[in-house]
Amino acid sequence: MGRRLTFLFALAAGVAVGNLYWAQPLLGFIAGDLRVTTATAGWLVTATQLGYAVGVLLLVPLGDVLDRRRFVPIMLLTSAAALLLCALAPSIGVLLLALGVLGVTTISGQILTPLAADLAGDAQRGRIVGVVGSGTLTGILASRTISGLVADAAGWRTIFALAAVLAVLLAIVLHRAIPPLAPRTRMPYAQLIASVGAVVVRERAARWTLVLGATGFAAFSLFWTALTFLLSSPPFRYPVAVIGLFGLAGLAGVLSGLRGGRLHDRGWSLPATGAAWILALTAFVVAAFAVRSVVLLIIVIVMLDVALQTQALLNRARLFALSHEARSRLNTALATGNFVGAAIGSAAATALWSAGGWTAVTIAGTALCCFALIVWALGRRGPLVIRVAPPENAIQGARPIGHAP
Image 1 (spheres, one colour):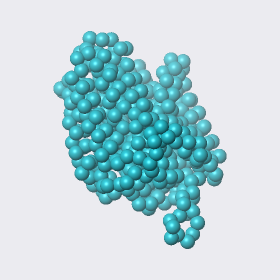
Image 2: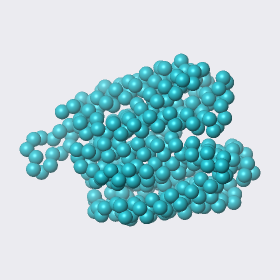
Image 3: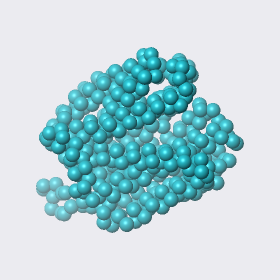
Image 4: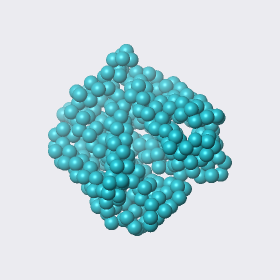
């Protein structure tokens, strides 16, 4: 994993996850063009997310048993076909189907991340996973802004056509760049899917880490969903294009991902996780006083994204240290838990906004951070500590991942 290959993985992961969000800021454009209501167009986002959940559950585990040098390009080419169908869709029904297929197939980032961990050496694994994970976060945050700008200039179909071309180019480049790597294990497909749950049941550290991961994504989704409501309401009343620009402030989390991986490599994974959750708690407290201040909101966005991106990266790096043979399956479990947490956070934001506005949202965010800190405090000296088996020629015993050496 040299610098070029690491950057390529990060770029491909960001583009793949960005495919999930192209349509989100364009619902009004699409509804008008296809002559449907905005409420009907809203199902486009749901179709993409449901498809992604299916793809993560049923396809990502194949990364442990297939040649990923072929598997990743095939997924990219399939997603390119779905993107092209989105660009040409003559009706809302066809677009719904195309976005559902796109969600299922745009899972390359979830395959590339454990692949990067496999290719990286033990001493740099956290840093490499951090860079690739930062690419994913960049794709999530930047895709909405890019989509809105392209749609304003050239129509909503153009962004899907451009994304299809980019996916094809990445498939070609990755096929040439990914080195040959034998599958970690061999087993029938049904057994492979069942083993996702089995490895989580077997590994206590995985279960505790999944709880932290889901809580982090619930807090992330809670904040960003409610922020849209806040910025579109008095006293701000910002248009959608302006609201999308606030996502650029969240790119500060990318830098934290680049640095956070080094903390894992140095053995500071669990102390850094606790510090990240304390920062997230502080951010929600500050957010309670930011209901009329753009400056405070931007500060909160930076703090929260740095905190939640850092803890998410450290969760993934610790999980990958659990097993060399099951990294794709562990990543499947983590991504599924994160997806469930995000869905709960988004739904909670809508209900809390209706019930108590921004105050209710910040109280809920504070409660989530307190819960995560309790889990971290109870697990940092036991359930969350992961012991890595030493190399065959090692003299000393296994080294725990999480505490400073």
